[in-house]
Length: 625
Image (cartoon, rainbow, N blue to C red; front, side, top):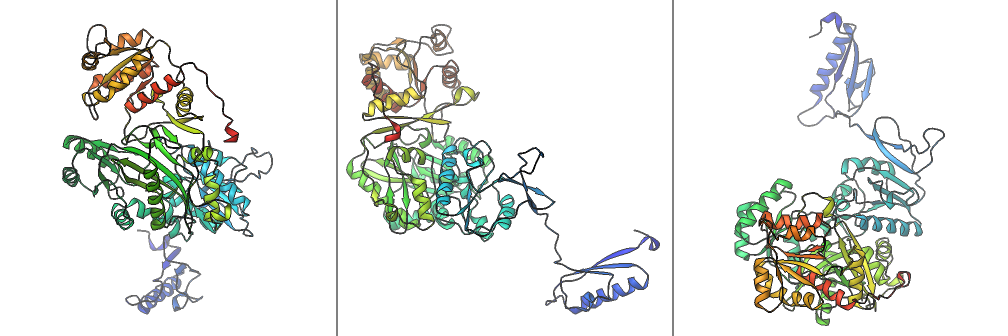
């Protein structure tokens, strides 16, 4: 406590506005305190937010400040990236925020301006496809006369090139960091649907800041993500989906799974790239997956979804929606059955094995969902065709990873058209018809590329959580040739030595039999582990026995080390954590031997090899699709 003689200046804080419970009595007390201090020769500084009081009269204190009685917020201020190393004034439209100082930018308010939010760091599940969408959206907005602003924090993208938008902010995509930009720029609206899940998550915060969300509303996005709301929409639209429940605890999950019947798909909601998604075959699997999800996600924000797993044909559409209808450039069919993440599946346009009836139902369901969700702009829907019925897996009212692919192969610039829809120009006004666009003669195969050899210890068996880090495209007027080109694009160069190692789980052996015969008839020597070897031999398909890794000789490791193996087909028992199977897969990857963990992929490969065994392939001019 300071001594009386040491006190030279005192800050007196008032009571603020006069309200019930805090009236003039406090003003009286403050006034008396100020007078007493000044009589003692002490300098008085007064802060109060109510100018209509005696306390804030000019003669009550030496200095009077009329200010809100709140802790001041330290605001972010915008600085220019100095691209000229201080040699002369930089004029590049690159900006970043700091705490303290002054703004180094004075925004122009003469034109309508729109902020486009990017997707942030490139990672599995959210790659440069979203950057493509942001860039094309900005170009379209510029052509329409808008001032454009990009907010993104990844300098290694095209969207953060200096000449894409009128202004670029290198900022984390969080509400706190975005707020200073909003206050400074005062945009006429923001577009979040092209920046993937990262940008979509800003919707509610932007609305609280008073920024209009252009295109699909935040409420519609929530309706698609929230299980109960989405189920109500599906029921109204008379659309089937796999039976499922939303749970918050392990006990609720076990109860739901046993009611639905195993296998079930387990996943947290509001996540990207199938993060945390697994297929549970029993209670033990489910408990393990729930423990993992609860350790990685806040369940209040990411409720757990339990769905009945259907092993059907998966397909998806990207659609452009306006107030009058939808335009579907094409339906994409996945080669691998449901259970493999769509980003890890081989995708074919136009679909080859979906009946006309199923196509028509997919289009009709897409129309109903677009209308019910009031989508304006882009929408991605994933379906399962199972036992002659169409089920909806999920709907994302935003751009998706397949937008660049389907735009290229159909010739319909989805982002450009969607952006024009968002700013008020209908699909019809842009020269397109509603409904499913006519299918192209050329077949396009999109194939994933993986980086398992660079990720030490990663499990390579495909499942519902995305693992691919890139993709290639094969195009031809023949589906098998397009598939062959896609395999070549991934770096596959077969056949070489015509040796293939096979190790297949018991439940898949019957399905593997015709595939094994095709490889044998094509001239491949089949090397198989004991169970697979016995099965092939008993069905008249020649094979050679190769031992598992824990034997002393003639093991899979020994065979791979001879560098004469073209391929490993390893179909593991799902959720089987046996170390031997994992080591086989890892060893094949690290030895540079192609390995497939899906029979659908292995079948597609041999069909492509059979069709193009003469290695004569056609050339397609991709600029004239």
